[in-house]
Length: 322
Image (tube, rainbow, N blue to C red; front, side, top):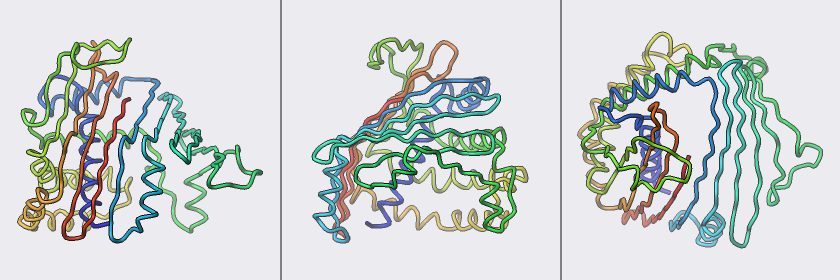
């Protein structure tokens, strides 16, 4: 597949992350992020459930055999991906169960339970029908110890990498840096809770929609690359985070300089978007309760990439909720 598709997918994921965390209150984006993250930091525990369904996936590419492409798309069509979790802040522990549910001729399902503590990650080895594993390991937990892994590889263990509070603070600053660059009038809209089709039992005082269309996708992508990303690099360069991330400030400064010096080239590439990208739908609705805490979110994405230069064609339609 072409590099254009990789950049497009990365951008969409990042914009999705922005929307999921940013739509926290009917305020200007900057204030909304501050309020939302402050409220989230107060939560000592919560339970969450997510499900995403691949409604359509077709891939046509000169670099991928048609038989292989057909098999993959047939297997993933209408596939469900679920993630159920429970979180507690003190003592820190997060329990998650990832579910993969395939439909069609290769119909099958399997789950992967995971437990994360302050210093270790436990992953239960699943029984995958089309990828059989030795029965003596199936059902047992694989223990991932970052400190032990660093020791075995001859590297020095970085305890800051396991600092959950610092990691959360870093994530909050990154989100704020990105959100400050996005215009509320262009991407954020209020929806009457009565018209939001919320599930039964979900009570919301406000529903906010983050929306990307064919008309603003170039602007959204340009804003991220030329304005938001340099601000993210500034956050990463802070003393408290550079050590945690184990990155060199000089390299971050060089990356920022390169971004800022190539704005004309970025603009030229983004102009090409209209030739191969069609955004039929990309919106995320976030419902907030009376305490301004997100209690429900849903995603509807339907995009198509048709690159005439490489003859790559990808159609992807995904729905989901949390």
